[in-house]
Image 1 (tube, helix red, strand yellow):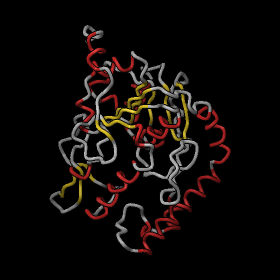
Image 2: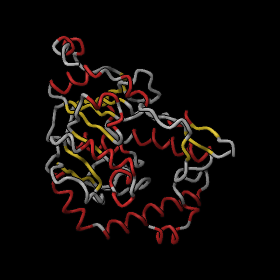
Image 3: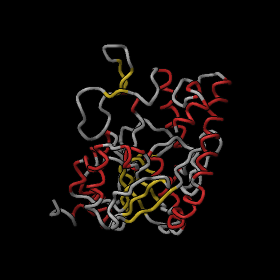
Image 4: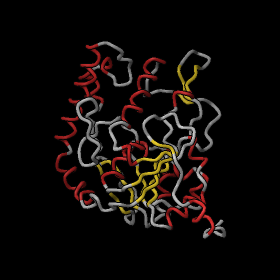
Length: 303
């Protein structure tokens, strides 16, 4: 990847401010296309083999209901009793990233885990939190684990039920949301999970923790550098995080976050219900999990 960066130049970085500059837009577009061509050629046989299992899941849950639990602040408002009742009534739970740090993880094993970030799918990165994530995954032997086809997970238990999706991107060139082809949306794990859920044919998709409000936590440190404060439902370091690897200017960061909202418009949002009662996402109805009171009355003794 270093060779690729040298060839295309830093000026075409996806995280630099584009604004109304046509030349910068072209650079970013062709950078994305170039990387996609390179990866598609390199991983062609690999992708074909690994995607075979996912293909069999198309519309396998037609008419069903799914709950996507992301790790944004609103995830902390999810009532564990409601989630357990939802799962017991046949609903499927999808969890992403550092789900194991949420309080509900102690009582609720997801049906599916989804990971798209290399920090959780590539053991060669030596990410300390990655081992913690996979230690938790391996305590849920009945769950499926969805990963990009280029995942490097040689140290994972063979008992894990692995499913693969196409992890390449063609942002700006396509609006595809199928996990079988290059994505058109920005590379967010929550969006990868939505892609898989819709591919599997779920009729109703509830989501919590997909808040799209990271921009609210931007601030400047003592040196005037852009940093991100704590923005998850679990506790984090008191010190703001550096934005290294992301935009390093406010205008670039806000432009990046605007793509989060645009990415959601590519999905069939009429089937999505947002459980975040204070959401700032437009075009997706806000609601609650079905039959809450009825389900609670039958599960009073579970906690």
